[in-house]
Image 1: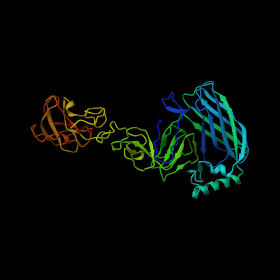
Image 2: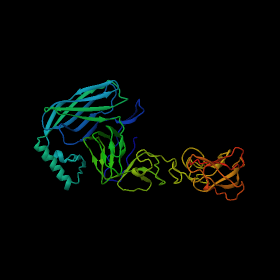
Image 3: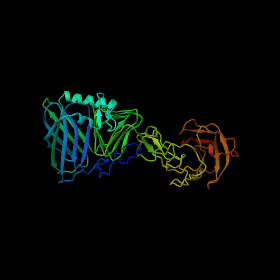
Image 4: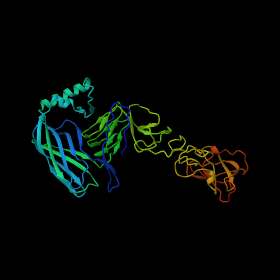
Length: 427
């Protein structure tokens, strides 16, 4: 999904970026930025190591020239650097040419927004805070690069597009150095993210919105995450862990480690109004539910009426009055969002008794026009939803009718009280 970010934090990274939206042959929908995109690469300190990748433009049509430029860091010379672009009918290989090189300086490290510690955790290098642990990490990374005589090599190349991309859309950069060490950088455009318990299960991309992990750390688990004009959120006290993976942070994108993820939830029943996620620095927000606390969490169960606390997909209570809140459910008895009007008056053949099935249950006669009479409490209740049993009714005359206690229904084929068959519906 592609959504807009809301934030109360100090940084709102999303800019006005044009996107092309695709639905591929597999039914997946994704967004590709249409202009130049530059990615800052966060990975663990192994060589060769990609530092920056630029693609211009990212979205292309047949006949367009697509330019590529990358920066690779290594402590020995590079032998070969190239790119491979997938399209519908194969893969094109684009050789890249060395343009310039420079020794890694202290300022180079200091100006990197995303640093990676020895434990594989990504640290946001706030430009306003160069003291304490961040300053120590900058100094440590610089001393390491200096001791290893690390150099940043800049390569570039281009190709003329001759085929379309509608099923997959990946650009992969490769580098081999004189010690025969090989590394690759995947910039994915078309693979949605699959995350379970904070752990990634494959390379993926996220475009034009806000996502992340709530109440758990993010662990790339050896995979690649590409952020295209989007924000990835990690709660305070949790970490973004590479674990051998790579984070590609595109233009107008950001990793935020001081915010919380929310779904909209105006009525406060825990059911999300939509699957749209927003980020706030506050740990609780009126009108929202934390992603980790919503019904369905990362695949939320959507509320059919977000303006009424009593109306949601989990409701099991009978209400004697129709919904009155001005929404599309107004005037109906569809409190549990199943699209069925659960008002007893809508059944001509059944006398309906509703409420939790372990409450007192009554059977009543129907006059076929919505009227009820002769209500009598029934004994011998079924003990589970979906089960039936024979019930004993002393007679069909009683004045103890209480609609709020009723649940399930009694088969009544003649429209009069027969009083001996009970089926617990458990809606």
